[in-house]
Image (cartoon, rainbow, N blue to C red):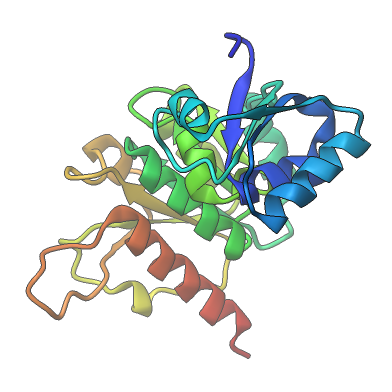
Length: 250
């Protein structure tokens, strides 16, 4: 793979590229002798685009993706343009009147967690995800595989200064609610029908103190069993669907 290209694998992720950005596809590898209708359909679509499809042994393909589950298909693509602070300004302006829902991930460093959060954000119509440029997993091939194609549907913005980005979100009219296991107020007591930004902290340490200081409210999820906390991607899913529930309730 070239340094200026990205590797994408897995049926859902590849299909999303075919649907959204087929012009980015450079090379295609299909597992030889694979008996999969989904993969054969992808191969037919690639042929219709005039792309050369290389038939490769399964073992070779597994080495290409460091033994991750490629499901018989790998593609090399031109990288998508990364969204940065300037893009955040435009999105905030564009969505001022649209009752936006932002997801802010403070130092989520496990690509599996980031991918799962992106997938849930797509399912719950999150306006944009904001992550810090440093101290965060980047949107790599593992994130794309876990997100099952959702990366192509959700705006992910990488910002230099997360605290400054949160201040801009507040100035745009959104209420910022941080999730913290020690908070006395429950997320279920929050009014999430208004423009909202949810902040989820990273694995282990949660939100940084500087980030928590910017929250309008801090809320927790009730833990009724013996465990101390939920995985960040699971907690994100629960909270985002509470937003959906409230906004769909008349």
